[in-house]
Amino acid sequence: MKNIALVISCLVLLAAVSCSSTKKSTAIVQYQKDSLLVAIERGACFGACPEFKATVYKSGLAIYQGRRHVNLVGTYQAKLTKSQLDSLLNFIRSERVEDFDSAYVNPRLADFPAYFLWISDIKPTKQILVSHEAPPEKVTAFTKEVENVVNGLDWKKISESVNQD
Image (tube, rainbow, N blue to C red; front, side, top):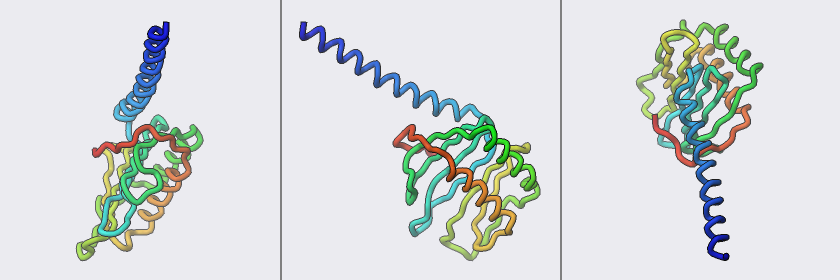
C-alpha cells in the first residue's frame, strides 16, 4: 500500500513539474512567433552599464531579458493593456521614427554604453544604433518613453536563463 501511495505521489509531482515547464515553453514560443512593435537593447560596457533587451509585440505581449547590472535578471513576461498598447502605438506613429537616422555614433567614444532600437510599426523594421554622448533630443525622448513603458509593466519571471538572439 505504501508503494502505491509513493508511486502516485511521484506521478502527481511529475505531472505538476511538466505542466509548469509546458507553460514556460508555450510563452517563449508565443513571443517568437508574434510581430515586433518596438524593442530596446542596451549592451555591455567596461563598467556597470545595464545590459538587457526589452521587446514589445503587436499583441501586447512584452518580454524582458535582463543580463547584468539590472534589477530583473533572467527572462520575464508582461502584457500591456489595450490602452497601454494603443498609447504606445500612437506615440510611435507621432514620432515619425522612419525619419530618424539609422545610427548616431561618435567614433571617438571607445566605451560608451551603446543601445539599439527596433521599431516595426513601419515596413521594413527600422533599426537604430545609438552610441553617442548627445544624440538628437527626439531620439533621447523616444528612448525614454519606450523605457518608461517597459519599466511600468508588471513583469513575471518565466525563466532563469536569457536567450542570446
